Amino acid sequence: MIRPPGFAGAVFGTAEWGDLRADHEARSAVSAELGISPHWAYLDQVHSASVLIASHSGNLGEGDALVVTTPDLPIMVATADCVPVVLEAAKASAVVHAGWKGAAAGILPAALRTMSELGHRTIRAAIGPAIGPCCYEVGEEVAIRFPGNEATTTWGKRSVDIPGFLASQLAGVDIWRSAECTFCSERLNSWRRDQTKERQVTVAWLPIS
Image (tube, rainbow, N blue to C red; front, side):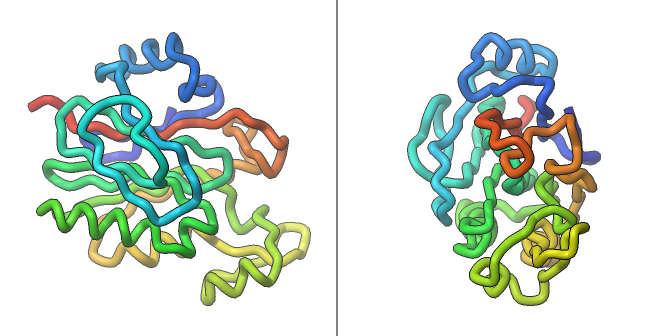
C-alpha cells in the first residue's frame, strides 16, 4: 500500500491487495489492517464530472467522486491507469476517479467545489499512481483537451500528463504526488499494459476523534 504523508486517513492500494470492489473477505482484512470499518461507500464510475456525498456504505450510484463528512465511513474509487485523487479538509475527505474524460469534464474542480459548498476548505491533496506521460500514448483528439500538458512517450509518440493537469487545478492546496506509473510498475494494475479487469483501490476516511 501507499500512504501519502501527512494525511489523517488516505491510502492507495496496490495489486497485491486484490480487487477490493468485489472481494469482501480481502476488503475486511485490509480494513482490519488500517483500523477502519469494513463497510465502504463506492460508485459506479462512468468518467463524468458527477460528485456524490456519502451518507452510508454500499453502492451510491453513478459518479466519479465521493465526499464524506461522517467519521469512519470509508470511501473508495478503483483505478487501473486513471488517476486517483484524495482531498482532505479538517472535517471532510473526498476521493476522485479521473480518467481523461472525467479530467476534461472537470471532475476535480467539481469535487473541490462540493467540499467548499459543504463548508470545508481543502487543505491537502494526494495524486496517486496512474499512467504517466512516459507511457500514455493518445491521439490528437485527446491531446487538444489538455493544452500545456502535452508530452512524448518513451517510444516517441504523443502523450499527455493527466496527473500534471490535475495538479494545476489545485492552486493553494498542499499536494503530494506519486511518482509511480501504473504502466511501468508491475505492482500496479494497468489496463493499457495488460487489458486487465482488475483494479487497485484508493480509500479515504475521517478517523473517529
